Length: 232
Image 1 (tube, rainbow, N blue to C red):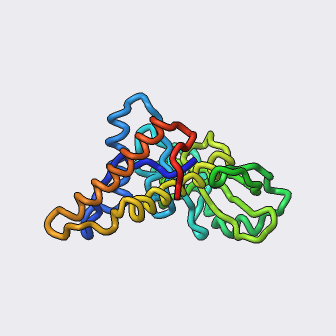
Image 2: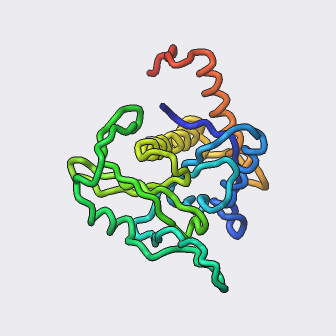
Image 3: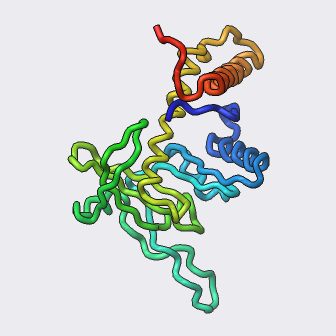
């Protein structure tokens, strides 16, 4: 477990494509390059709409907002004239749902956080989050603190075969992305480019991420999982 390795970059510009659209573009490109592979796309709640983007061979794991409008699955077609319903009855929000659950309704599970294991209370159910995935159910996972010191968290996945523990552990692994951003800024100094004209800043940013990835891949190839360089 450790920092993530960047494999693709896109430039976000005001008035242009949104960040979820840019992320979807990169996933389409990656899927085309690896036609036989399946992917798990893990992103924070700002990218939850990717659940309904129809990404090929890609399961989405993300955070769900506390007041998300959830519904039951759409009822079967009746054969009558008119447009069939696209969603069932309105269900309660994730936050209301968790307050109605008793402690015995949760399952105690061991989840991986930051390279170590912790006990969490988990509960999963399949719901229709019509705003982000209007045609397919998602699996909502409610995560609670056994000591009740922290508020409940809410995650989801488009893969209905994924267990609650897998969802929690995968989302916790997203922290590696934040570590990579920190290292690119502080170690590679990607946040202080020495160019400020034309395409210089964006090229400097791209070079910083490439250099960071190249060094880490080289180090893993040479040293494996055993560090051989002293840190002073």
